[in-house]
Each structure stands twice: as structure tokens, then as C-alpha cells.
Amino acid sequence: MSAIAPVRSRGVGGGGLGRLARRPETGSFLGLLVVFVFFAILGGKVFVGAPGWSSWLNMAADVGFIALPVGLLMIAGYLDISVGAVLPASSLTVAIVAGHYHLPVAIGIAAGLALGLLVGFVNGLLVTRTRIPSLIITIGTMFGVMGLTLGLTILIAGSTGVFIRPDAVTKSLFGGALGGMFQVSIFWWLGFVAVVYYLLHVSPWGNWVYALGGDPESARNAGISTRRLTIQLYMLSGFAAAFVGVTQVITFGSAQVAAGNSFIFNSIMCVVIGGVSLTGGAGSVIGIAFGTATFAIVNQGIFFSGLDPNLGSVIIGALLLAAVLSNDSFRALALSYAAKKK
Picture 1 (cartoon, one colour):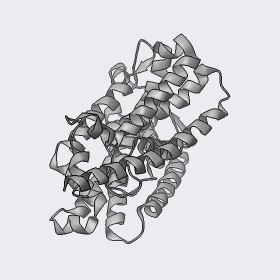
Picture 2 (tube, helix red, strand yellow):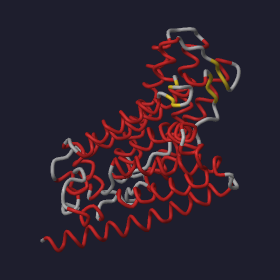
Picture 3 (cartoon, helix red, strand yellow):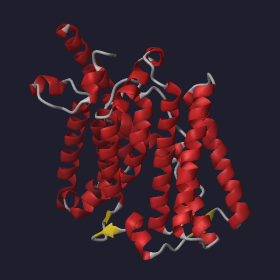
Picture 4 (cartoon, rainbow, N blue to C red):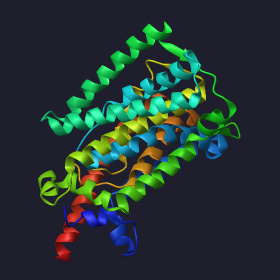
């Protein structure tokens, strides 16, 4: 791990095409180009114009916001399935506080984000204090949060959906749209990409994440507080899912108990397509962003191309398999290059 972690944690930098070809995000970038050109040809001017760009960027912003911390967890060797329950729970928290009880929207948003942080803290605490795999723990918390969300929403509001009317400022900040098409969540996502890029590839914190995913025992022996780092990663994941829940309830003016399930596997697919290793210890923020864009283009490009909508799932499945194969190839290339440098 020590031979390749420094390569992963820096930017592309100099070194020519050979070094570029060894980077994990290279495969995801090539996949992004192929997919975009494919749908640009089939979708024509509509797809390459504002309607097409806004369509897939809006989707990428939502799933991409969650995919970033999910990707960090996968680099560290963990999974988080509970994001699919945190999102609707956060939305309904905002809607109940500000819509049902008519408290200030800011209080509702704070409560929704706090809920995400709390679920993340519980996930991290259970993962670090037990020997149960993170997959099982987060599945358990997912169903627990889903059950509590359903029961409390019906008990408080008397239905599975709650409406809210945000003020103009809140609407413009979290649910507005430029030109009526490009949602403001796109800019939140891009800003989050920049923040997570700094954390993973610039700050020492990122090296700890790679070390945790490469060899947890060695990371602990090196003085890294792996328990605290794991809890931080899960809290970041919970916060991201809650933030998307906040933007959605502000955008659409309502929250539903059943929303959010699609984000579980969609976020994981974005991360894998983006070149993150399934075994941990390797991946990049840029790759996750490329993988998110690729996933969104396929999902939305189908509607502009006139193809059978069922082909979207086929293409996504093929991309996922190709991404796993290419990830192994690029990783083997990087390892062989590192061995030659010794």
C-alpha cells in the first residue's frame, strides 16, 4: 500500500501519458467520454443543449453528493447502506418541523442535518465497537431508521407525506434553479467535490483514510486513531445523505417516507464506475465525480435517444462490470510500475 498510496493521494501532476494511464480515474474518464459521445450522437442537439446538460447534471448533483462520502468509506474498507433511509428521514424531519409545526425553516434544516450526523455517529460507533461487518450494521440501521420514520410520521402528521412551503431565500439557496433548468444543488455538489478533494488528496487526513483501507492494523500501529476516523467517515456520509434530503424537500415542497431507496445502489455504482477499489485502499475524488457523471448521463441519455428505457439498466450493468475489470487492470499496472521503481 505504501508504494501506491502517495500516487493516489496527489493530483495528476507531471509524468507523461504513462503515469496518467496508471491512474484509477483514467478508465472512468474514458468511459465518460464514450458514453457522452454515444448519447450525443443519438440524442442530437437536444441532448448536447441546455435540456440535456441540465437533466444529467441535476441527477449527478443529488447522487454525487452522497457518492463522495460513500466512496471515502469504500476506500477505507467500509460500506454504508443506511443512506437510503437517512435521506427521507431528513426530508420528513424538515417538513414536520417547518411544515407541520410551522417553526422556522432554519430550525427544520438544522434538525434534518443533525439527524444525519446522529445516524452516522451510531453507524461508526457500532462498526468500531463490534466485529459485525459494516454491511450488516448499516443494513440494520437502515431498517431501523425506516421503521422509525414511517411510524413517527404517521403518528405526528397522520400520513406518509408532509408538505412544506419554504420562504423565498431558503428556496433560492437549496431548491432554486438557474434558467428554470439547472438546479442550485449542482453548485453545492461541485463545492462538496472541492472540499472532499482537499480532505482526501491534500490534507494528512486523506493519507489516514488510504492507510485505513490498505491495512487497518498497520494504520493503528502507526498511531492513527482508526476508531475516530471511522466515526468521522460515517458521520460525513450521514450528513451528505441528510443534506440531499434537505435540498429535495425544499425543491419539491414535500417529503415522502418511500423516497431514497434508489440512492443506496446508485451511489455505490457511481463509486465503482469511478475507479474505487472494492477491497479498499485505492480511489480518487475525481474518479468518483467522473463515475457519477457517467451514471447520470446513461440514466438521462436514454430518454433523449429514443432507445428502450430498459437498455439503461443493461448499459449501467455493463459499465459496472467494465469498471471492476478496468480497476483491476489499472491497479496491477500501478503495482508493476511501483515494483520497477524500487
